[in-house]
Length: 560
Image: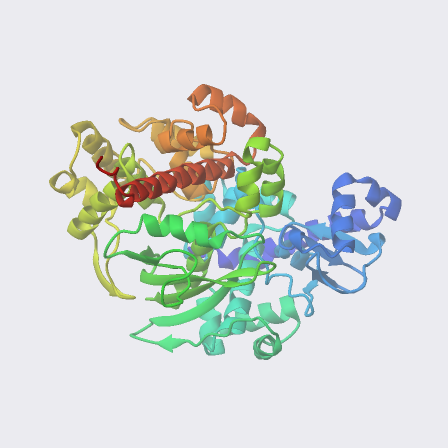
């Protein structure tokens, strides 16, 4: 009988996946070196690996069958012969091929693959849900149901495209979460096992030995000897509650200060807080904090920048109600700050347009802010459209104070209101045009009764279609939600007035149709181009503000 975790089928499912992977690997090994290098994808990856190019870390994995290990592309080890190499998209596929992680380069201690945001197919949507802990909470049947397919079909697609089925992919993700905890906290090893999503200590020990070929304690000891690894304390609180600090790597270049400023400018009192700029008057670095709702209870986080230009990172301090929420928290923070974006490729593509070149040079590594609560983004978009950011913040603060769930976590007092609360009581709190209130309450009702679902497992086309079917929701709102929730990289919101004003300042068309046509060449990175246009509009506002301030203090004309 299959339970909600799907684990009774794990042995047979993973065994079949390994046999399938083994057959593919054997066929691959029969290819000569010349035949492999004639494949343009293999040749590009082999060149990147030979050059030890760190820009490709996390984008693919190098499996070396002569040594039985897999590495990140920048591993300093001797370059293997092409005959002995297979490239994989996921660590799970390398595990299924019988390889273990390299102890020298730690291939999973890098930013994740940007491919799961760039792609919008079944495999990418499944990877986003797996990273959010869906398999641990709902099992493979639950994952398949949320994606709209049978477990068997989902397994076939993932094994064919990624080299591993959903159980193996979830297992690899649990191992990576466990390594993060072992390297970055003082949490007892038994607690690490359950926080990472393992069902038993025995399963945890077997998986870590299988993946890393060392005991969990040895992973922790090795991490403490490595420079640059953040090692934060674990502070037990109430029952099942803990505070911890982790370092999350970002892909360089990373314009972290700007994405924190974007979130801070929209912070809701009682639920969020921020320190802006590059440094505070007392020397404090920019930070962003908030309370949020996770699967097992409320949590709070505080994000600050760390690392350097070549190896940027984010320090994440978290207060959790239940350590089982750690993996979802990490996944959501990575999406919130867009840590896995292929910034080098994005900047190169956008800088090819002379109108954007100066902006790209001034702000390399610009990011598209994501979301930790998909439903919250829809209400932010509906309430904030056609009004200023400060006005939207005031309206959202009033809504949160009236309908938000009271909490006491991380110094915050409220969680963002649920869709049920807004559907039932939103009309008592919301202010503004009646049609806008109808749209907000209508969307809340659809979310509350399940007729509308917004999560990272949706495709952009399906999500936008469902949103546009609701009264009062237009193309701008649907596109903004896809941009923030799914991390869709190719959304250009030409209906946004500020974005068009920023375009005009850079010498681009400010007519929506003309701008859309001009922006076609920015595909598939139009979301990032839009961030440059918003940044241009913000700079224009700051210049106008400074000019008005200067005019006020300028001396008036002398009397004759």
